[in-house]
Image 1 (cartoon, rainbow over the protein chains, first blue to last red):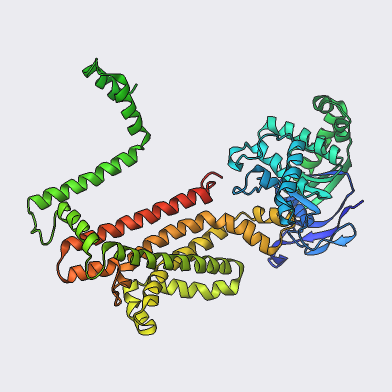
Image 2: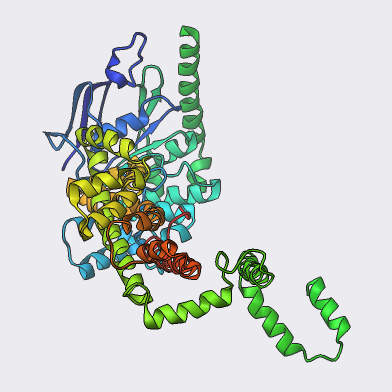
Amino acid sequence: MKSLDVRDVVVRYGGGSRLGDVAALDHVSLTIEPGSFVVALGASGCGKTTLLNLMAGFLKPTSGSVSFDGRPVKGPSSERGVVFQHGALMPWLNVVDNVAFGLRLRGVSQKERHDRAREMLNLVHLEGVEDRRIWELSGGMRQRVGVARALTADPDVLLMDEPLGALDALTREQMQELILDVWARTGKSIFFITHGIDEAVFLASKLLVMSPRPGRVIASLDLSFSHQFAAGAKSGDVRSKPEFVATRERVKGLIFSSRELVEESL
Amino acid sequence: MSSSSSLFVSRRPHAPALPASSIRHLVGRIGYVTRVSVATSFGLLLLWQIAASLEVVPAMFLPSPFAVATKFVAVSRDGFQDATLLEHLLASVGRVTAALVAAVILGVAVGFAMNLNQTAQGVVTPVLELYRPIPPLAYLPLVIIWFGIGEFAKVLVIFLGILPSIVIATNEGLRSVPPDRVNAARSLGATRAQVIFLVLLPHAMPSILTGTRIGLGAGWATLVAAELIAATKGLGFMIKGAADFLVTDVVILGILVIAAAAIVMEMGLRVVQRVVAPWQGRE
């Protein structure tokens, strides 16, 4: 099984030449074990997206290393799929061709790639919209297309950059359950970014609490609520458990205490 | 029911409802702006006819629409300056089309090169920015000195008129590509060439087509200048020849035919744009 390793990474934008430049990421280390659901939670400016860009291979660290399956990450690759905050779909392609895009890049025949794309659309509960145009879909449907597109390329890890950030509250809860369902059924590792505390606690098998200026991980918690949901428990039941509420409050405390620290230092 | 239709009904209570409403329905389907545009066109035509009938200016300077229409038939059948109207038209459309095709191919390539390579950007920018604001008539003598008076020189002048809008539109289209869209393709395993042809090109397509439409306008504007170079056929040549002998009706005829040809090509490009880039403005 393949794991994604981030070792002692520092990222400074602009080469760090300006005086008072704060590191976007300051000596961050983490491992995404096979089959785990790692959630990075933090306020804006804490380096969550920078961390994801490093793992995806869109960005190189100023120092430190990122490796996947023991080999250094040198650039983007289809073994590490990405789901973007605003979908980043191709409006000139219809739904099924968007989902099949990764297979087209590999030269898979149209029939085969459409078959595979339909399977993935079924997995995210999007049937009967294959021929629709992207702009005809709602925000939640677009994000499901984005998830299906990443899954069609059959990556080992899914990197999700605030994929639910632009959705309304009701759609958001449905999507959380859908993502857990996909995670349980495919066994993929997931790295998921959010600034929603409830969402983070619900989804994570491992929760990283991050803090800004400089961006760093201030706490790492092993949680089991996502496993409980995947094992058949109802989302509402899980969320109303005393442990869930206690964990949520603890995480909230961690985030606000780090904010006070930052404010004191300013 | 709108107020105008109830007025209509109250005036003629026994009028059969169906024909009136179906005509109204047909007219209603054509947009308000289009209806005003059509009315304006006919209004101008009418003003022109009135001015010509009253002989506000001598007919030699302002022939009536009827005289121009008569000339249209005559020049179509018998020709003017050794070529029929159709031959003049085809010569001009051929030049504009050749220049447009060449400008699109080269313009898109240059636009991409500027966007993908900083050296190319550094080389192209001063050349483009220096010649772009110069009116074609100003560098026309230079084109004749360098390239002679053949067909190539004529197409070249039109081509130079079209090129900048396509280069600029391509470049703008590429600059507006969201980084996430490129990253999405890369994370699915796209090579550099695949990013160019399967992401950047389709993304820039609406902008390229808009640039082509603007360039086409510039191309027709340059046509008359181009056909001043020892042409024997062409609408610009026909207008110039007619002007020399004060055959004003042929001058007006030539102007109207150029306008009509330009409108037809523009409409064609709009259809292409709607088919090729239906997502434009809907993201």
